[in-house]
Image 1 (cartoon, rainbow, N blue to C red):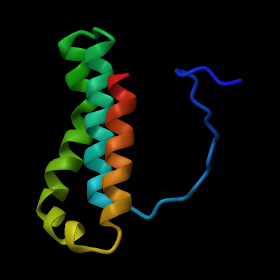
Image 2: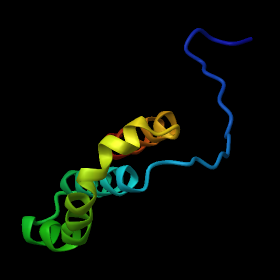
Image 3: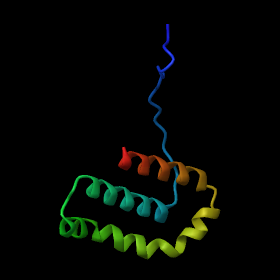
Image 4: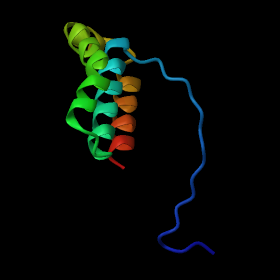
Length: 88
């Protein structure tokens, strides 16, 4: 018998095709959020996240094309999952 609050889950493995620039930005934001939540020193955060920040800035101009691409739904799902993971 299931209780009202019980939720059945299953693991589903799926390969997503996502926008490259979008995934770099999402990964960078994910890492940054995790570092902040872990209470790392600001100098350490800056040093560890600088390569991601550079990649995010370099790819920013390609985002509008990625949002129009057929992979946009998978990209949005990926972004939501990564940010939720960082915040949980």
